[in-house]
Image (cartoon, rainbow, N blue to C red):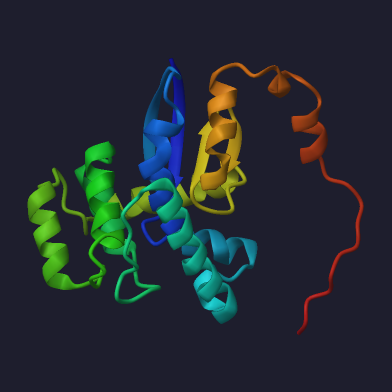
Length: 211
């Protein structure tokens, strides 16, 4: 049985869609999942990028595309009333309460179903009571675990969410799920030269940053 690591942040609608699709996409594969919350903003800061919601035309396209993908996959989705929002309390809650599939499902659906404010204190209190975490989500130990997850993700070269890790390989995004399934099923492509060759650095034009 293979171990799959599902790296995610609840702020990402693609992470929600990939989470919902994962069991169906990997039907017939032998695997177990380790769910790893991380702070997407920490990845963006480290790689010097803006999030999709920080660029208005990209934000508009992203949410249209997300709702189309949800429609085609038959996954219920409603964009939260406020986005972006601060995901830290929900990420820490997931860590303090699990994070197993039941917990991650509850936290992701809290954000992406119903269309309410994901950061509303009353809703967060209700979710916390329902999940009954074994640790205080606001404890320094839980906060440090989230920082450690984000740092580990950066060390492994993770730049976005969702990222699925399998046998040291990283697969990014909802549309990579069929590729993960193929790797789990032993597709011989992964033993060929393309993976290493196409991931190797190569010379090219470097765009100067405006300062």
